[in-house]
Structures are given as C-alpha cells and as structure tokens.
Image 1 (cartoon, rainbow, N blue to C red):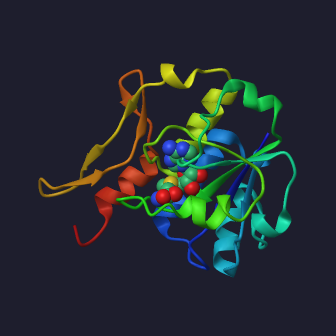
Image 2: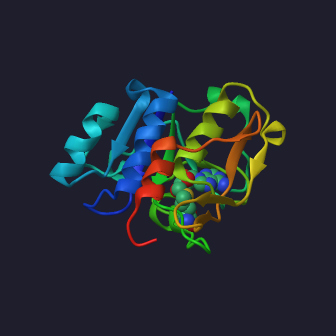
Length: 189
Ligand SMILES: C[S@@+](CC[C@H](N)C(=O)[O-])C[C@H]1O[C@@H](n2cnc3c(N)ncnc32)[C@H](O)[C@@H]1O
C-alpha cells in the first residue's frame, strides 16, 4: 500500500510540517511513502531519508486505484477499502481552525477518484495517516479512541492548544514526541 502525501505549502517545508512527515515515515516505513509536489531543493534533501520524493503534483501524476482522505467525503474509510485501492492520498497541510476545506479545493476537486473520510473532525496529517493504517489493518473506526483537543504544556506555565483530533491508545495521546519537544523549545511563546 502506498501513502501519498501531497505537500501543499509551496516551496517551504516548515519544521512543524517536516516533523509530521518524519513521524509518518516512522509509522508507515519509508518504502511505502511518496511525498509529491516537493519543489524546494532544501525540502527535497530533507525528505529523501523518509520516503520517495517527487516534484510533480499528484494531480499531474494521475495515479490509478487511489483514494483521497478528505474530511468532507461522504463515506467513512473501512477495512474493506484495502481491496479497492493501491494508494491513499493525504493533504500535506498544517491544520487550520476553523478548517478552510483546503483538501477539497486542492485535491478532491482536482482528481477524479474515490474519497473517504475519517469522521468530520480535523486531524493532523500524521494522525490521519495513522488512523488510515489502523483501519486498513482491520480496526473498526468506531472502536478507536479519540481526543478532540489537546493541550501541550510548554514553558513558564503556558501551554499550546491544538484544536484537532488525536488518537488515544492505552491512555496515551499518539503524537510525535519530536514535535512536542519542538513546541516546548519554540521561541516567542
Ligand atoms: C490538517 S488536515 C488539513 C485539513 C484542512 N484544514 C481542510 O480543511 O481540508 C491534513 C490532511 O489530513 C487528512 N485528514 C485530516 N482529518 C481528516 C478527516 N477527518 N477525514 C479524512 N481525512 C482527514 C486529509 O488528507 C487532510 O488533507
């Protein structure tokens, strides 16, 4: 199964986004990941260790038997979908609140293919990839445990609120620990 991450932030690859992509590579394994629409030379070099890198957009590549993960899709992803598709496409976009429907505008409206949702709550890209893998591996969507907003304590008693849906497993929130460390170190908080 191929997981395609269509980068939608132009030539820039923000550290936050890079850490999510790295986390995706840890979850899926680099052989099954394709980063598309990567045009900055620095971004290419940064991503080579974590998956295949392609400068074309997935909308130009027009792959067959693919499915876009879009919060606005009518159908929820099910385990049976692993037989229907060879690849799943995700938007490489940082979350925005309220959501601006960018997955639909930048991917779903441009590629003629099936679309699936993981529910109507916005997840980070790495969480969406993780949930997709869990479902394709046989987990039922309704059986997964989620938390719809998380708070990361940073410094001086302050915290960062992330108004997105995260997976909870064995009482622990599934989030990149490198990303948490990055938030804690970030200047200007
Ligand atoms: C942070 S989300 C970006 C969502 C963006 N704000 C929008 O309105 O479409 C990044 C990617 O994760 C996937 N994703 C996140 N939540 C999802 C959901 N509930 N259902 C399906 N895909 C989801 C989509 O592929 C999406 O492009």
